[in-house]
Amino acid sequence: MQEKVASFSIKNWADDDRPREKLVQKGRSVLSDAELIAILIGSGNKKESAVELAKRILASANHNLNELGRLSVSQLMQFKGIGEAKAVSIAAALEVGRRRRGIAADKIVKISGSRDAFDLLYPLIGELQHEEFWIVYLNNSNKVIHKSQLSKGGITGTLVDVRLVLKQALELGAVGIVLAHNHPSGTLKPSTADKEITTKLKKASEALDIKILDHLILTQHDYLSFADQGIL
Image (tube, rainbow, N blue to C red; front, side, top):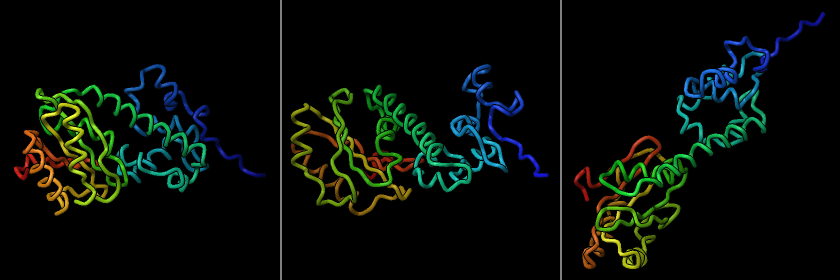
């Protein structure tokens, strides 16, 4: 007689182990990351529950939701028990979270230090797998007037159109500029090109009484500030 395989669907779990019911009864903040992901998954496989599968997926991303958010649908589908529909659900949920952080960052209107600049820019470029260079324009109260992408891809001095940067600064009435780009590799060490770009823009802006306040290098977990390091 064939042995009946127990179902690992959430609806068949004991009441105390059901993350959906736990969320309804106790609130979403009490759930672990694994339990939240388990709700998205709905069911595990023949050998593990949805929570156990979620824990394994999280472990592969160093238990970091930001790293998990970088996984593609095809990468998520490499886990046994994760088909396309479940992979899409996970990817979509994490993208919603990323966009929510972006909305919160838009509320930052004044840059008082490098941390403020990091919080503003991280939702835009912190998790990208390619390099982007951004400019943040500030008024005389260090309030953000505008932010825009200068280039996308590899960063070299030839990609910096100084005239365009300063033309936009004059049109906006900006008196301060914060430069920023990301390093998908995770290294925070400024390259020669990074330093050359900073020097080039700094010299050009001084003639128009516009100050380069900082240049940030962002990674997935941290940032480096040229101003804080005294290399601006």
